Image (tube, rainbow over all chains, first blue to last red):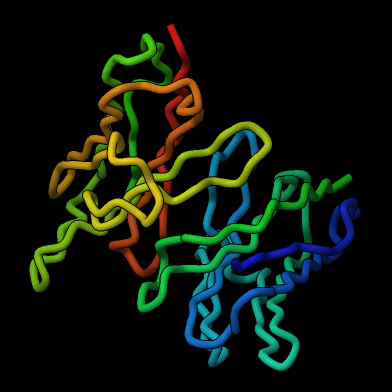
Length: 118
Length: 114
C-alpha cells in the first residue's frame, strides 16, 4: 500500500520560506508524477505544482515565481519550497501522486500538514 | 484558466435516495484527439484528504462502489450516487486536468443526510 507522509515546520514567519518534505513508502517514486496541493478555507483546493521522477516540473502560475518542487529518487522523497510566504499561504499542504501514465489525476494523497504563516 | 463551478453548494438527501451533483467547466475539457473528457471527481470526508472516485468523467476508480457514477461531456458533468449511504456524507469536488498550465478544482459540494 502506497503511503505518503508530509513533514516540516508547522509555523512559518511572514516573508520566510516554507519547506516541506514528502516521504513515499510502499512503491518507488519512479515513473509517476508527484504534486503538491493545498487547501485553505478561503481558496478551496489549489494545485501548486508537480514534478516527474526525472526532475521535470510544472507550476501554478500564481506561485511560479516563489516555488520549487524537487524529487530525490535515492530517498524516495519529494520536497516543496515556497518563498516569501504571507498569511495567504496558510493552508493544509498535501503531497499527492498521480495515476500511472497520467499527469494530474490524483490517486494517492498524504494526510496533509497544516502550515500556518504567522 | 478553466473555472470549475459546482452546483449546488450543498444538498441533503434521504438515505437510499439518489444524489446528483453538477459540475460545469468554463471551457470544454473534451480532448478531440482521443475523445476523452479530462474530468475527475473526488470525495473528502472530515479530517481526511480527498479520495479519487471517478476519472475520464465516467471511469470508476478501483474499489469505488458502483453506486457512484459519472456522466457528461464537454463542459457539463454530473456525479450521481444512486442510493445514498450514511458513509457517503462528505464534500465532493470535480477537477479538470485538460489544461496543462493549471489544474483546477470546483469549489465543492457538501452532501448531508436529510
